[in-house]
Image 1 (cartoon, rainbow, N blue to C red):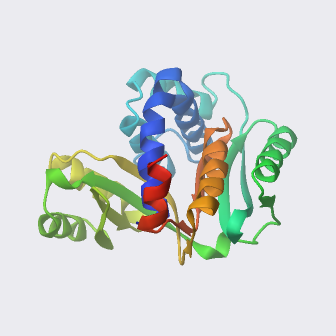
Image 2: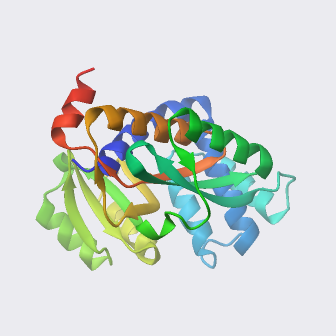
Length: 250
């Protein structure tokens, strides 16, 4: 099983918990604020804001909360000034890790992220050290009990997606970020519910991990993902079925 796909499912379950304690909405609000600040309040003219709103709705964020975040981004309401940073590094086993950061205190966040890497046996790297190993893609995951692969393939390709593949108990749709909105609209119009939908970085190649190394890598990426300033974590690991079974049996 592909590590990033299995991990996405884990993150979805974590997101439901984060939602209840407000962490997920806080991260989604930051994304909306930065998007509105950089490109304006109209999602029809600001593609990045349109993506952020899609993600916020998928996270069940109320409309008034979305609207407040937009107004903070445009300056109509007072809000923090967030800076975008991409941190790159290595997890145990030589796994490449990318962290998309939105922070109002770059020095504080850099120190905290560096410590997370070090405590997990990883290392924060220099700019550009691993980013080239990934492609940005829109990803949607739909439970297999909602549709069949042929029907979903027809729908997705007509909407501009690049591929549909089986990922555990879900079908995974991959698309270029430019087609993300159109693909999401087509899935919604078909009445299909997604387990995961986001724009992320997909590794060009993956590293197979044994169970022991996989535990360490998962601990690192989960700790990073749980950090308030980390918007998204991408890593190029794959957990073979045998190792995955050993981890899930614990």
